[in-house]
Image (cartoon, rainbow, N blue to C red):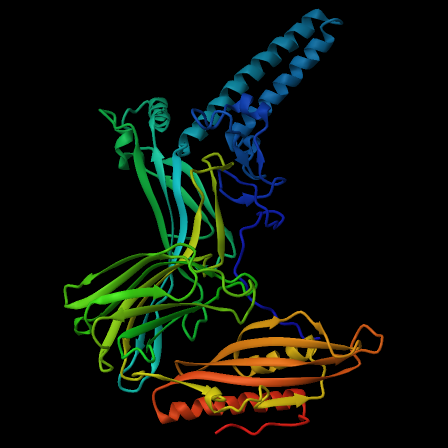
Length: 591
């Protein structure tokens, strides 16, 4: 048996057992752990050694520790361990003295007195050692946290050349930022002041700790100076913020925390995440331009790809010679009408800006062949010059990240989880500049094959009949064959079965539509599949007949493209013949 190892990005896990459910961080070493291996300090330990945090927000929080950083081990290192042992021995002597005091009062009182003195002296030394250990650690603060987000940006440039008509998409490396805003207030200033008082140096240099930011999901991020792993430190120097000044401090100070990163591996989007294709509307006297914007779903997880939920900005710049913009329209449904602004740019172009476009749902979730699109149609006062060039910018927001980060969670300065104001934003922004020449698209006309105007009155003209059952298996076989040949199937619609001429006959009707690209030019196809199923008492039909009628439609600018549209009809028909078998009566191909 051959075993293939597929590398995957790491996930934050418990340091001890490897569980992916991390409940807290050890606030000494900041190792992540599950509820079994990173636990809260025992109450007796807090009373014996003292609490490690206090004040507003932390007064009821118990510090979290891993097995190597527990209070007992942290408080009994080096010579302190001897005092701890002496204290335990003193308690033991006191207990023995208390037991034998009834038999020998003098010996019992002596043991009780010696044990009590030893235990008290040792406890004082151990508690002082624990206090010194806490003073050497950063001051635990509890600032207010807002605007938590992980934002990744995918930038690129789209060009349609006037020389060779080649459509190119050049992408830049993905850049990401994990950021949030922390606001220090009066309680944090009091914590820093108390620490300096205990150090007996009013202006002592101290560090603070505001907790940690942990990134959830697969960590496909390149480690560097700003990010060393999925757990990000929130430490710093109080001297950097006015709220900690001794004289006349403000009520609060904000810390704009941000860490930038790059991905371990760039996403495989060879054809580009967005296609922007211009066309001159046929039969518009060259006074209308359509901009077709299409995007695909992609991402590190094929089962849950990134989905575009909003086009934040679509800006188009055209030559001023085309005249004023008489009107514009979005040809698909949008959930909220966009805001539009038109005007003149500083370099002498006419511009149209659309903001906050929310595309409606198109297709089924999880459909690998699903491609979403928007078409912007613009009418001008003058005519569109086919020798001109248009340019613009597209900014869009997609839910999810290309690195695999699915969320964040925060721990306070004692290692326990904490909340924040608002919801965390996890998204990817597309920022695509485009420059498109109209020289290769020119003014287009529409070709329909077969041409309805040339058809006779027979509705089954150019239809092939096959001796196959017109059921779902036939449709699946045909659509799978088209997908393998590079056809994009937009929808497959089944009409409810109807009774036939006889009781054992059932009539079926299927509507299949899709698209194929020749370069950047789309050619649409429409297939009507009808037929009858014959039943003989079983659940499945015994036999049947199927008729397949194919219609192809596309825009063309020259004879070569006109010929391609006709060839596409022939190609689809040949694919149907190969998939469904030899027809009983085959129509001849149209001219």
